[in-house]
Length: 205
Image 1 (cartoon, rainbow, N blue to C red):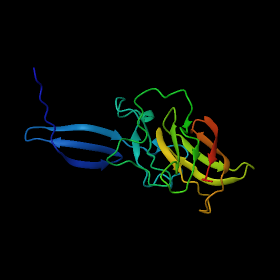
Image 2 (image 1 turned 90 degrees about the horizontal axis):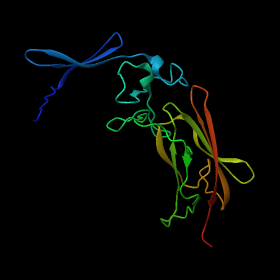
Image 3 (image 1 turned 30 degrees about the horizontal axis):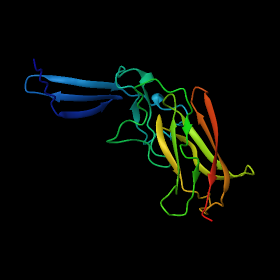
Image 4 (image 1 turned 45 degrees about the horizontal axis):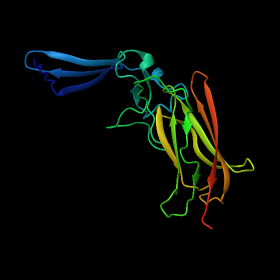
């Protein structure tokens, strides 16, 4: 037996006293498809009132109740970019239990930024156990001096990718040698994860 379902176009979007309604209207009936009582307290706790301007709220688990305040948090964008993921999956979506392995993964811990198309970038993948984490990721030289601030206290999605092209903060290419990627991940509830990975910047002889 086949079951058909027709969902009418949402003709009315309205915000009334912080209540968002999507109403589909037919000739005979009016049906509220979904509603959500908005509160800016659902944003990530690291944000001040001014920080919340222009930042979307995102639903964490699609199967959890819409009105569950623990099922919403601030959207994250690409590092340095706008906060939000329009037309793409929610940055904070979490449909499975978080992994228990390393948060930061660098599959190939070396780069040779010489423009030949081979290992020109250092590729990094992160996966945090819960939504709401922010991160700072800094690259240090062998003497312990910070040379590149890749991410500074930025809100992250639950997983994503970063890459480094071998340049320092002053946009100068770094000399070949051993460097350290130091990543700190902070959650508003006080959890902190720190990881260090040694990498090599190489060049052709």
